[in-house]
Image 1: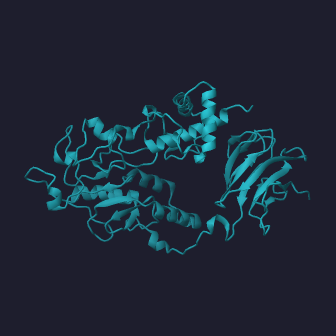
Image 2: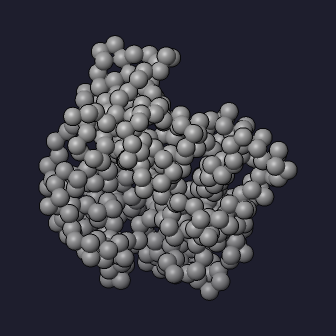
Length: 423
């Protein structure tokens, strides 16, 4: 049986001393052998057409230092598809375990490869395997494996976001304080636990029987209230005297904001009002779901107070900080004067090339970004690689923070570079 592909080492490649096979290209046609890669830098020479046995050197694969990915360079004159993204001649792209590679501009008529990194003790930074009792990773409310896990403080017990949010809602209606569902200690804080969420997701991959139904997960998500850190009321009853900042030192209440002190725009905080801490200035604001003024960045789910207090006409002071309106605003209202540091994976050389291309075209960076935001809005861009939450729901009027806006600009500049014709 003829092997479908073979690898030839680049002259500049540094050979793996042990000739260990660290990756392979798996053909979709199982009648042919896989293309095995043992050197840290390889030029792949194989058939690219599904109807021809002619071999061509069509790409170079270089192992990345993290050992969990590689950089692929298009060595052919044709466009190559990597996970649906077009890679033009001489361009590079990072590929990971499971990346689908088609050595041509279209799926029709070309063979299909899947990049696979071999498992082993030296791969992916020697990931450590530990045993976890599934009973220690279950929510004590629903008795299922955590879903979108949150941790409450100071007791540090963990629950599903939706389960605890519903408990929080009912507790506020019936009691003067929110108690932990597990140990009954007073809860002052709740926040997402991304580390435990990763563990729960790994456990689901290892044992699919722990997976809940789609409808049950969707219902839990509708209950979920915790997006950023929540500071929960202390349970103090309404005061008969006026509130002053000195009360912070006398009754232990630390979560106050300006609406705890006085009514603003028809609203004043109650003793059990849940508060959000701004991730920019550290100040507090009441959590007001459905109020109509965004309090969270849609790109990262962190809370910012600038848009909320600005809409109410409130300015900060020494006791109650308020951050700038610029910290959270619609994408179309953000401005930018220079290429973000995050662009092109922080590659300064590539950033300079992009800047040079923009100037040679007689354009400015804001002009280019405005054009590509319009393309983004019209869904002319594949959003799957965008490193923002809720990517499919984001529009030009979506509120995002400065960090997420820079991530979006970096994403758009990637597509801008791909659109520039090769000379």
